[in-house]
Length: 64
Image (cartoon, rainbow, N blue to C red; front, side, top):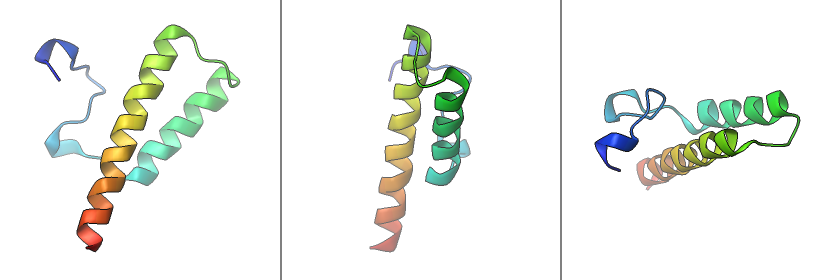
């Protein structure tokens, strides 16, 4: 990811959240929008899914 695409909400290596925390934010986004995402909300959702997947991978690697 280029430095230009980093947002204040983007995770940094020092502030990696757990999959559960990110999942809660995804659920809150869907509840807040009533299940219909605007273009901006879709971008937020996609960023959250990428962060969630990274958190899951981290958990799986630790378990191995």
